[in-house]
Image (cartoon, rainbow, N blue to C red; front, side, top):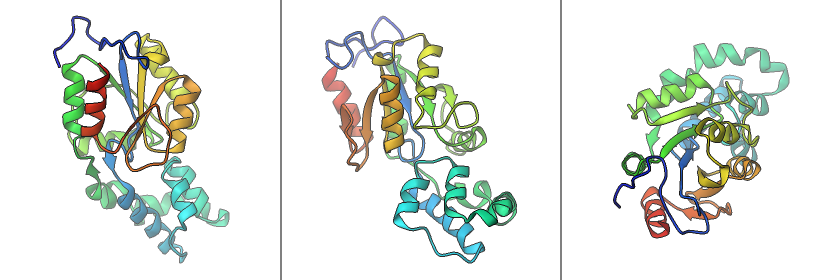
Length: 226
């Protein structure tokens, strides 16, 4: 698709983006990266250290949407909360032990290059803390396309719409001209709360205005819209 004359705006007659798509917000876990198995290993190793059984399906579902701290405090009994920092820094260190297990989602790098070529702004809204998302960006040597990067360190975590609204305000664009790509109920709630068009990504039962199982499919969907 040819680059248009207005950087940061992809023109379209679509009902979804009548004024053009002006930016794309990415969730991190489950969208940018495939981290489900790695995160499950992390949380279960923490539980094993405390002599506790692996996460239940309900605990897994919550943990994959929440911040790391929220997840740990949800799965670890309250009397043990005072030991969480020690265990996650000295015993089961995420950066050292888990980061090498992360995988970039197939097609993600090509998709962001496609958006970059089209002059579309990109941002990240994640429930990881600032240090956590920076580890991901550094580990995969991703290009410096994402600005701003909103985390649980500088905004209320999803499902709050604060992050999405902050990104739109920073860009100076209307939320209805932005696409939020997510894979969880918290992502959906955050996008809806901000008035941002939501794309449900992956094998999910979420009901987004756009749905795609992978980035090749999402690229085709956007290409058919524009």
